[in-house]
Length: 213
Length: 332
Image 1 (spheres, each protein chain N blue to C red):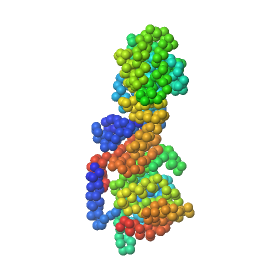
Image 2: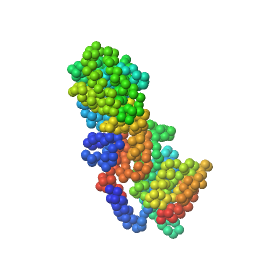
Image 3: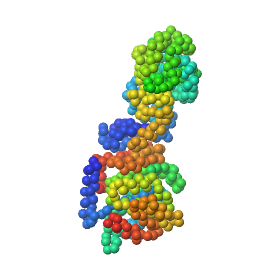
Image 4: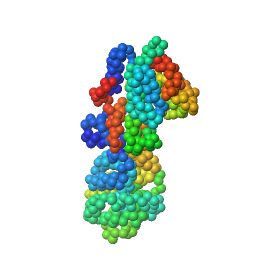
């Protein structure tokens, strides 16, 4: 089963790269809820294709299904890198509808969101196993990076030998602490940015081209 | 809370891995929890549990007990256990040892609350059947006590103690204070029994118990007991009772037959806690209540099949890899 799945996946990848004319890397944007994954995905997609990936929100778990933006061609230093950007639901170990109630969402809707978010996490984890060639791990630089979820996910990515970049997002916030993020994952390169404000995006694209090209 | 295939209705016990590759019977990949959720597990649930319980006792089918008992949620399991224990107590209170006061000192608290809530609804049908049979077999005192279980605490406690000895392991018996055993030799207490019919009829029983009870390592004493009493319906019910009572009796280990899903191994058999431990072994998504989930990321990651849709009322769809190959519309 696993073999077939892998085979199928690689066949489809080969097919898609045939049509794309070059190998397209599928880059998963992972991270805890509300780290700014969708904002980053939208920023990348808008910068290079003009389209957005999905709606952004302050409400956690706004992204409850993995969304893909295919064939995002990033040109750096005369070199072109084509990636599929996969914006994934925030990964967490607990989903509680009461969390949504604080955002003026009715209980029924909150329960539904909660259910969808849980499915989203399952989907994100499945994608991580089967469908991504590289990972951008997005963290809110204003939050403590030493969490179980972060450690576990980065550990999984490492065990897969996937290229990974740590993005310390939200550096526009006063309380952002990029160094704390860098210290949490010293084995990986940490790139500071504000996806919302578009700060330091040049370095972001440089690194993407470098790591995933 | 086991799983049920929504296609063919086959149930899988809590912790079953069979369903992870689709339903073995119909190949379906949609399952639901039974019953729906803890919040709905109110009185109606308990009622159904009682019916289930009564059915079990009437049919006297111990293997049938295993799939049906886990269907109750935690609270109703507790109630079922409480009822079953009450039955055990009522039954065993026919044992003249029930009047032994020593046991009373050890088990006074358990019986004040449980019988009041559960006993009235226990199993009137069963009771009738037993009464008829009991009349024939001359153990009518058992039924008499069954009618008035709450007001006779000494007997109840002794019954509890007796129930403990029924399922207790030899080790337990050795280490425990001999309160459960000491009652047995004191069988001449039978005159205490409220029923006037008893003295003559119960005497043969007590003599039989005398021969049986002092043997402490006889863990399956109920069987021996039933043999002596012949074909009365209680023999059937007893098959399940010691086990359910084991959940309630604090330090009684699970029986060898292990019908219950979560075997109480420690001193406080908190079913919810045990269920949690069991779930932790393999569940990738734990539905605490609708809208509240706990996720085991490593399990989600490690798993080839994955949950693609959690639905209302605890239903969910798991994606089975074989089916994914053919059905994946995205052609990934």
